Image (cartoon, rainbow, N blue to C red; front, top):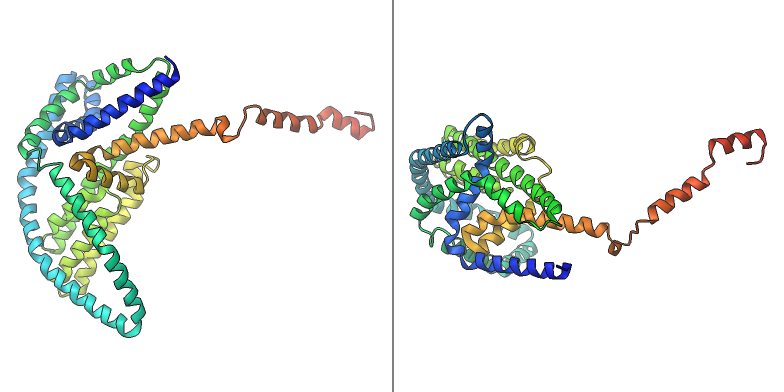
Length: 380
């Protein structure tokens, strides 16, 4: 098969796959979630196999522990978090009134000293606010209608563990089968690209999941100790959103400081609330992320944010789940294409240019014998 026909074949296959993904997006959530969990726990099953477990026993053990842990979290933390979420929702009007009062005072000061600045700010907000609200409303609607609103919560709870079990049991066999389907001519290159993608996903997804758990536990405990109403909910929410760069910390900081302003009379407690998130970010940036995620995962924060927002806007919550794998694959393919371009005639570099330059330099440089002859006055 010629390269043109191969390219046409794989392009058509990719388009068909994307079309099916879009058409079936409303029922894919339990399957995508099960695949993500199976991918996450496959190394654990491999380690259990190395110490003597069969694959089936390792799968049963890992899946059972995951379900038990999930039910414990669902039964112990969720009710308390939901109760605090209701308290936070009730406190939001008071926070908004407080912020409105502080903002009114600030605007009055600015109006008295620099009226032209206020006019520019008002013009900018008027022109951009409508577009921002429309975009956020559309994104939220797509997340709801494309995710849990269509695929019921019962199907998510009951189908996902079943999908996880079978995928986790047959993971190695599936990988071997897919490897046997690769075009033999390009199999080494495709395996290398797959390994690079797996390294990126393993480094980011598994590392960030651990970071989110640790940060959520720290924020929840610290905010509860300081006495902030809704501290458990805010801490868990900030930790859960930490996989989106800076969103979890900034959102949790603004929400907790607003609650602290509405609850505490002492500015020391408000400052302590803000300090919790500053300490969390310092620990995360200097220790957790470098140690658990690594600095060479190949996913820039801007790419992560764009991928998550684009996935949520296109496919709802399912799109959010597959956004990072798609971004990782796209990054690997772009780097591979750039590598091929830099070693191609399109870049302007020829293979013979560098050896000729080396030969020319070596020809101009005198040998040790020639140097001795010149020093003694003999002809070279």
